[in-house]
Length: 254
Image 1: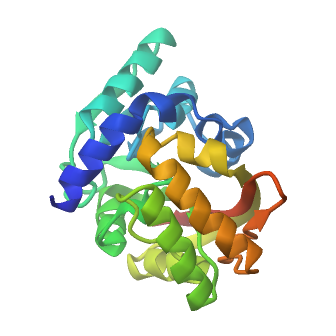
Image 2: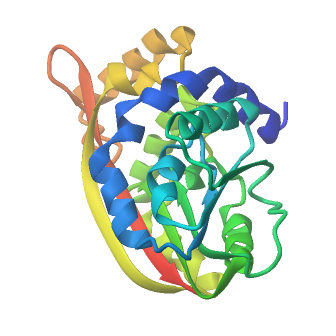
């Protein structure tokens, strides 16, 4: 199975659970994204990898148009339902690959993407495409979980994420994320980081894959007891496994 087929299969399974998951609906994260975008009534916005349309629905009332773009039909179904229930009329839904954006150069005032970079085999290619469709003077906002700057910790962290969700490719360290944006000709204007504590049950539930629950828990509990924290403060408190994801939100200008 190729990567794109795997993504479609996995996110078809995850679509409903992901649409209500607390990590995706978290108002604090959404407010951080809103502050970075600074929406205006004249703004055309691309929500790249929109998933169930959570960012799309939050931003649409304050911009001229949102294009909600995703690879998985079931995710777009969730996004369409969310926007219909909110009475939003200025959202266009498009199916396609992030690596092959079907838009003209300088089509958008702003491109936003949340929790997508770690699913791309070639994130640099995606960001180059994002830069192409962003107008001169426009804005690119990227929010994702990042890995440790320590290579060994980062490898272990990413291995755990792949065991949870095989569409995961690699969470980047923040320095690599910044370099990738700059390499695409974008100028970094702001960056914000924060930690989000996760517990195992909440984290694994989103995948809707019961067969992964016990084996991965055993691995993470064993690592935590051995003092290997994978750069995410992996911890076993005697009852459950917890860890902290480090979020990184970058705003760049073309």
